[in-house]
Length: 467
Image 1: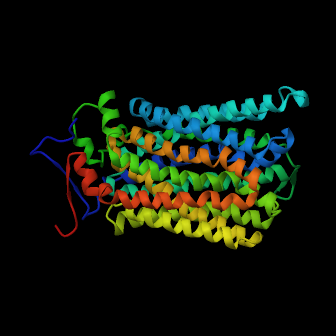
Image 2 (image 1 turned 135 degrees about the vertical axis):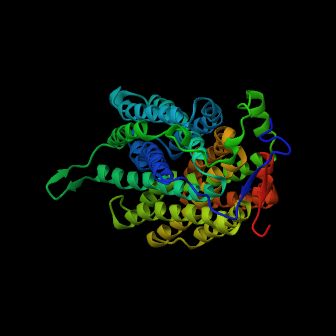
Image 3 (image 1 turned 180 degrees about the horizontal axis):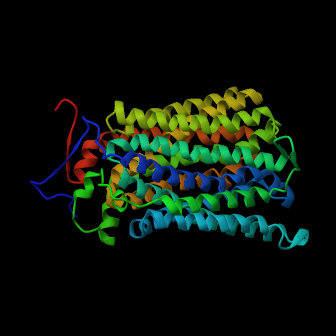
C-alpha cells in the first residue's frame, strides 16, 4: 500500500508551525481533555489494586507471589488485549474502543469488590485467588482498549511534530488518575472528614473498587457527549498530511505485514518491555514496600509525598522528554530514550545501595518514577504514532504498548517471588537490568527512528531546518 503516488509527494515541514483554523485548538482541547479525563479514570480502576494489595493479601492469607500473580495475570491480559484491540480499534474507531474499555472496567471493578462477599470466610484461599485472577485479568483485557483508542483519535487531531508534546500532555492526564486514586484510596481506607462536618469512618478495601467505578461512570458520560474521532466530524479540516491520501484503508494482510515487518516496531517494543519492568515494579509495589519495609503509614506525610511526588515527576518526565525530542532533536525519539534508560539504571543502583530509611526511600522512588515515565510516554505514544501513521496508529501502538505489559508481567509474580524468597532487599536489584537493556536497544535503533526515515515510509518528503 502506498500513501502517495510518485511525483505527487506530500511534504512534512518542521520549519514553521501549523496555522490551524479559528476555533480548531479550542475544539481539539475539548476533545483531548475529555479523552484524557476518561483515560485518567481508567487509572482509578487500575491503580486502586496496589493500594489495597496489603489488605487483600492479609484478609485471605495470600503471599506476595500470589498477589504478584494477580498483577501478572492482568498484565498478560492487557498485553494480549493491546495487540488484539489495537487491530479492532483501527476498524471500529477510537471512540467506540474507549467506551468499550470504560464500561468494561466499571463493571469489573464492582465485581472485584463484590467477590469478597460471595462465600464468606469458609471460601478457600485458592477459590478466592481464582476469582481475583479471573476478574482482574478481564479488567486488564478491557482496559487495553484505552490506549489504542486514545492514540487513534489523537493521531487524527495532531500533526506529527505536535505529537511529542501531546505525549507529554498524555503523561500529565495519566498522572491525574494516579494522583487521584493515590489520594482517594488511602482516605477511604483510613477515614476522613469533609469540611470538618461529615466524618467518614475507615472503609473496607472493597470500597476502593466501588467508588472509582462510580467516578469513571460519570467521566464516561462526559466522553460520550463531547469526543469525536476526527476533526472532520466536527467540521474542521485535518492537520495530518496523511489524510490527504485517498487510498483505501489497509487490508488485514497489509496491516499485519506493514507493522510486523518493520524492525523499528520490534526494537521499540523490546525497549518498552524494559520500561514496563521498572514502571510497574514501582507502581504496583511501592505502597506495600513503603508500608511493610519502612512502616510508612498510608495516611502519613511521607506516603503523601509519594502520592504527590510520583505523579508529579512522572508528568515532568513525560513533558520534558516530549518537548526535548520534538524541539531539540526534531522528532528523534531514540537518543532521548537511550539517555533516560541509562539515567534510570544509575538511579536504581544508587537506590539499592543508599536507601536506609523512609526519607531516602521516598526520594529514590520518586526519582525512578521520573525516568520510567519519561520513556513510557515518548516510546509508547509519540513513537507509536510516528511509526503507524494515521491509518495504522491503533495497531502499531497496540503492538508496541503490549510489550510494556509483557515486561510488567515480570514485575508481578516473578518480583513477588523474589521478595518472598530474598526479602525487600532484592527489590531494586530486580529492576536494574531493564534500564541497561532498554538503553542498548535505543542506541541500536539510532537513525531508524528519525523523522525523515519514518515520514518517507509513509510516502512523504521531509523539509528540515536549513533546507
